[in-house]
Image (cartoon, rainbow, N blue to C red):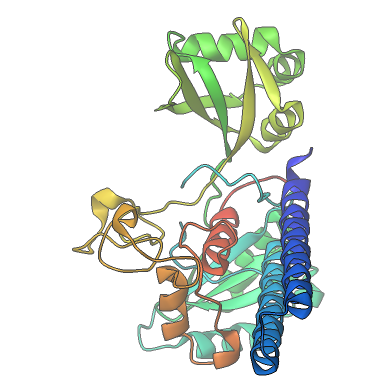
Length: 363
């Protein structure tokens, strides 16, 4: 299955599974209702109360089912959204298998005022009054406020971003204009023989996999660079995180498995999202976390998740809770009754989209 179809397939699987569970529960409720109806041990008032309780349970099940569908649709919409998200702290774990990376990269231009007293709103108005994207022949997909009074402008192509940068520099003298460098994507190759060196891995990738070897032979610059190895629970094996260019990423993900020595190893996308496993936030690791106490991924309390007594009803995501506290518009608030590690978490997915916007996936 292609990577960009994985989210849709997984979401459909979740939806089907929930539907099956609801059907099973309702079937059992009907059996209970039938048993009560046929029983001679229930007084009339007891039967009536029992039937009311069963009806209430069924209504609650329907409410939870509808709520699940709503939340799932919100995640689907966030996953397919083409709008850019403000430059904020984003967050890397291996990418969950039910999420896919975009096939098109957004190129951004950052405009920062030299005057520290100028606001983003003022700068945005100044840019829009002095520059016409239509006359310039560039496609602008979004304009966002960023910190320190700056503005971030998203373009569809690198050429459009360059044109816009030059035009802003020529029309506005009191600003600093930059096009932040995009990072190269990474993939992770699983279960490599532990004895293999970096060079042996690279050599075998090229010599034992024709698509990789043919492409590498045509390239002047290096298309594969091992960044680091990670441990695996399987003895004698390790994983390799490899930085690749957009074309090589496409080749590897289409292959899905690569030959290395005497083994065939799975290849997956490696997430650009950096995550802290102490505060559960994004944009830093536990080593640099400033929070004093360990946060629980299940209930947001000050303890390790292994010591948590929360159940599925009392779960609380710390990241979605913080997001809601900072969101003034109540209509924009998100559900919090899930684990912070849930791959369908709305705050996690927004942070993931931000992280993905900084990666060069090619045109």
